[in-house]
Image 1 (cartoon, helix red, strand yellow):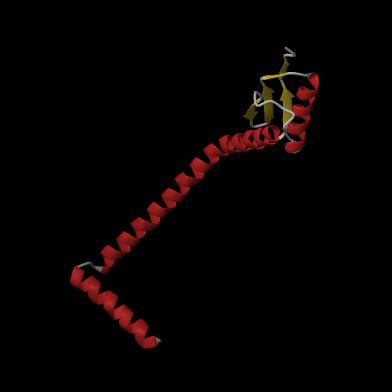
Image 2: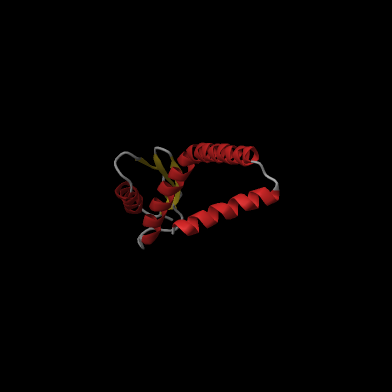
Length: 125
């Protein structure tokens, strides 16, 4: 194993010598690569922080929409708009019972930290 490691080290040094790179050049390139990696990580973290509220809203809206659409007693005219603090139910339903059911499903789908504003209109015609 030592021989393989020694051979690998000699090979790397020979490749560097043939390529004409000094140790100083290699160290500088390594330092630059490390700084670039840190900068990319910082920018990725900033992007994640910026997008986190939007992703949270999308998750809330998608969960409630799926739960409401899975219920056969509710029409597909219900729109779920999400904010960071909860969801808003919009659209029309035929009965007060459907409006109440949609609100209950939305509340049961979300944890208690989120609000549900039921703005559904009842149109019995």
